[in-house]
Amino acid sequence: DWSLLKDLCYTFKNDKEVVLAALRRDAFAFQYASKGMRNNKEVALKAVKKRANVLKFCSDNLKNDKDVVLAAVKRNGLALKYSSDKLKNDKDVVLVAVKQDVSTTTENNQTALLYASNHLKSDKDVVLGALKFCGRSFLYAGDVLRNDKDFLLKAVNQNFFAFKYASDDLTNRKDVFLEVLKVNVYVFELANDNIQNDKDIVLQVVKRKGSLLQFASKELRNNKDVVLQAV
Image (cartoon, one colour):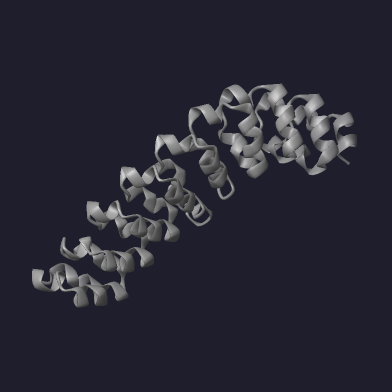
């Protein structure tokens, strides 16, 4: 039983063979290993490759080890949370982390980009890389990018859900929405009430995709001109 490691004497907690045997049962055993074992790169790699979040039990030295952190974020991008500030600012590491969001976004609605440095949250390559896998990542992008119309068009092209997390200054503007609409018509379902009650916009939308009529205002769903365009 891997949990027995918790109650064993220091000799066994510091015994590499014993610790590795416990890890084979469950990587959570890593938290009960000695400080020396939690600073052992070979042992740490075995642990994080099985359960990425045990990175939090690694020594500060290994939280700053690129090999160890990469192994963890390849398993689960949210493990970036436990890496050193230096590696949270490492573009290679963060790009790997955000690519794992496809399987981790259900965890408290967090995404790996949340834990990247402020510098990388404003890096266009990183943010677009994150959006490829999770639209919610745009929520954690730098304010400058979330308020950049040209970047919003690229973001929506990557993942239309990004529109939901752009700045209100952009999402409330009709002229901006019309440009975004050209990139991806499905953003209409994320639009605000004013947009969904704008007849000109709704006519354009349902002409391209009639099923989106369901997201128009009640008034326009009952408008004959709109219905005829949708069908």
